[in-house]
Amino acid sequence: MEKNSKIIVTGHQGMVGSAVLKALKQNEFKNVIGISRSDVDLTNQADTLSLLKKTKPDYMIIGSAKVGGIMANSTYPAQFLYDNIMIQANLIHSAYQVGIKKLLSLGSSCIYPKFANQPMKEEELLTGLLEPTNEPYALSKIIGIKLCDYYYKEFGCQYISAMPCNLYGYGDNFHLDKSHVIPALMRKFHDAVEMDLPSVTCWGSGSPLREFLFVDDLADALLFIIENFKGPGFLNVGSGDEVTIKDLAQTIAGIAGFKRKIIWDIDKPDGTPRKVLDSTKLNSLGWTHSNSLDTGLRKTYDWFLKNQDLYRK
Ligand code: GFB
Image (cartoon, rainbow, N blue to C red):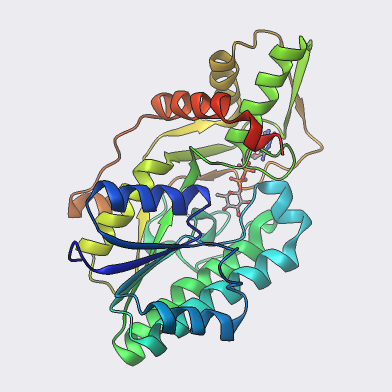
């Protein structure tokens, strides 16, 4: 990408999109446009095409998606499948129609089968059944990968994808029911300290393993990928920072200063038992993450403390 290339980042008010926008600006890209839900409904094909016709970008990074944690995924399966299929299909097809040079689409490690070989290489895709709690989201993200692959194959478009592990960081969603585990636990432990509660209840057994990546590292990886990966196909983006949910809860409790009882509600779902990515392909191109889980968690908690007016809405 040239420093004056026109680059569109969709979902630029969300956690991922805002980190990508910040990274592009830090890297002195001068012609960057952020697109959010208030600018256009990306589930609407005509509006999406019209936006891209008007803006005519050279490059596009898709940071827009309907996302949420394990309960949101299970509660709104139709919305997770429909919205994400439409957002990706509209953006990818419109990108082709207006001749965007290169496009980077974003997925998730939940695209892999529930019992995939660990660590999961890119080749594990479509080798088994998906984890039921996130099947709709995973299916939509598999479609995103395949759309990029097939536009590459049929029309020679440089459309590629990145599959990150579980993400967290600045601008995350701290909603108690809809969010992912890290923001949910930060809020629960923080509130318990403030309210002097005797216990905090976490979901599931605490035994699942998760790999986490700080969002600024993801943004750095995405810029690296769009500049260095020619495709076709997709790359895993992981940190190798894998922990049990129980250990994660202890760490976050420590950061928030909560010293009392942690209760595990086994009526809540565990989700997939383990999903650690094999990021060898990306690492061998020359990229690795910078923030350890501990550093990333502290940065996120500091952000959370400073932005309580946002997450309390
Ligand atoms: O982050 P999370 O919601 O998503 O949950 P997944 C991870 C683990 O943390 C699960 C446990 O085993 C949860 O049961 N957990 C414990 C909690 N306490 C809590 C809590 O208070 N809130 C939440 N949210 N979890 C998502 C997928 O799966 O991962 C998405 O649903 C996406 O589609 C995303 O792929 C990256 O890792 O289970």
